[in-house]
Image (cartoon, rainbow, N blue to C red; front, top):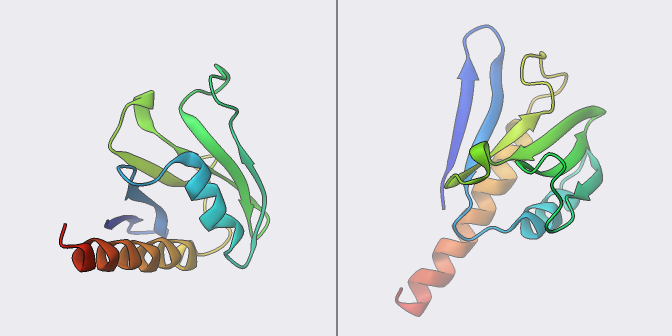
Length: 115
């Protein structure tokens, strides 16, 4: 699995995307809970119609963030500030790196299994 950083010239890293092929919302939440600075992780209840595209809400260093699946039917999760227009108050680089490293572990397992 790969991560796709989303950068803006003035703001730097504003969000990033991860493939959702091997990641369920619950798996994303578990990964988030292990990252320093992440708190108040809440997974959207299954079959809930409220904010159907937002699967996980959390705070990262005091900033409200989300795990969003555009149109509820995308191959990637967008991870970033809940208010996409807001200037991130903390660098999201540590979050992106944690997901990228986790992806490396999954790739190693598949390689070892010959898949």
